[in-house]
Image (cartoon, rainbow, N blue to C red):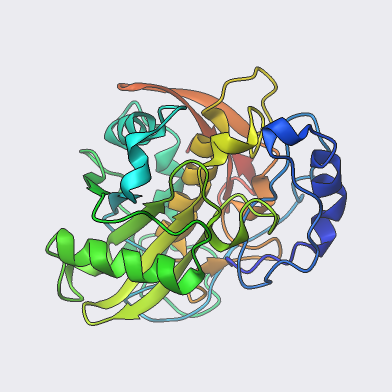
Amino acid sequence: MRIRPLAALATAVLAAAALTAGTQAQAASPAAPAHHGVKPLSHAGSSQPSARSTNTLKVGSSATQGVVSPTPKVYLVFWGSQWSSDPAGVATDMQNMFKGLYGSQDTWGTILSQYCEGVAKGTTTCGTNGIHVNHPTSTPFAGAWFDNSAAAPGSATAAQIGAEAAKAAAHFGNTTQAPNLNAQYVVLSPTGTHPDGFPNSGFCAWHDKTSSSYGTLAYTNMPYIPDNGAGACTTFTDGRLLSGIESTETHEYAETVTDFWPSIGWNGGGGEIGDACVQLDAYVPLSTGTFDLQGLWSNSANKCVTKG
């Protein structure tokens, strides 16, 4: 599930603290909110928790809605007038990544199609039962919005991030529950900001749900990870500045798809589909470029994988 206590990750975070202040290194934060956090804010080459040898995912609820997102739609929300500055090129990169995340070339996304909703609680294998996640035959990218009506908060709270997701739902015309059963709103904060305490809270990003007049919404808090330097939130050591945010956002995307309204979806002993696999990154060529996609847990393979 999205709940990931960070105390066990203190070693990894402490290793990151050795970086210079110029890369905005952070100290360990074992007191970070337990209800947030996905993968630890660590740096390439630092100690990370090993992938679990088993992490069988189980359905948390027999509900037919909110367990998974059968037909994923991703809305990128570039929050705040500060996006007039984007030194790492995050906005273009995120759009290109999702524009290419579909079809036969996307062998990473096919991992998700084994998971479903509308089956008994505790199910570990869907087979032909239930409503499966569909591997997109066209881009899941549904739109981008640069909300430059005001500056994003320097240190946004979780409530403010959720409110921005609801504002985005209105902007995109998703004003009933029906379209929001597949929509996920990725709220990207601009460079120089610290949403929900990033980076000192010890997380790379997190996802959640929020209640709104448009129904229950799935959303992600995505900080400007390149502010923490090359190697933050990825295992790669090649110094590529965008690897960390790509790895993190694919982690969040997959977890939102398979645990849409946390935590009634797919969870296991190591958490959600991405939590047990933070050591596994792969550069995957898509039609729009090559991106760092984080490995995911596959029940069918009984291990972390980067292709279905």
